Image: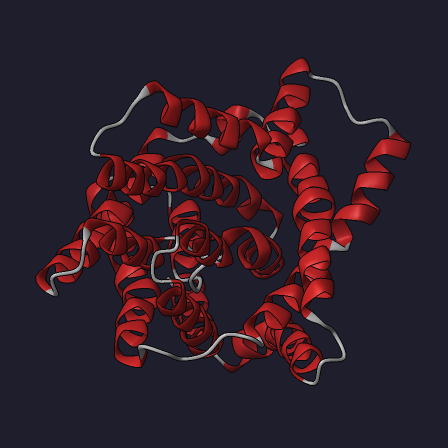
Length: 309
């Protein structure tokens, strides 16, 4: 356990450094925004493209894996939604809280952290988790909020969803990498070196950006944020583990990667969606802050458990 904690410590130290730099105003909010854009559109996309280009679709997509992760997410999604509705929250707020319960920081934190801790073989399962999060649940929250506000779902919303997926650089990078892999062609050496150098910037920059983005987060609605953090860090990996290990019998290593991915803290893009729609952004902000701090302890516990198991 101590060895795992020491391995994860540098990752969280980078997050802490970003938080400190932004907190003392050495790294202003505008700088954080542009650093995040660099990671999102360039560094992380290069890393994902390079991973996907070296894998086949069969190495990434596994029906049982996808079903186990998806149904584990659905269990927690329904539970968090039910709790929100019992508190008499509208459907829009319930959808945002449910999103907090199942969407982890797979892109900025999960990809660099889990491939470093679990090895390069973890890349395929992580990419599938990321694809499900981006395609299924990002679309779902848009559909729910739009339906709740407009009372119906017209063709326009599906056009918006389609354009959103096509314009997402992570989806584009993974799709392009898989397309190259399907041709059987290898990346030319200069291109591979270029992507390797650019992709290497993803880990430190993404972690620093996570920390910097936390500097303006506050723990408002503390009790709700604690509940959502508990759902994300504890209930989500438990539900995913139950589906992977006992229902679908996913291959052990892939199941471990899936469980570790489910144990990641609430993703920053949930806050972006909440702010975009004007639905409970402070609640999401607090959930990101609390879950990220708590994950310093919970992620090593989960990694230690799955590596022993």
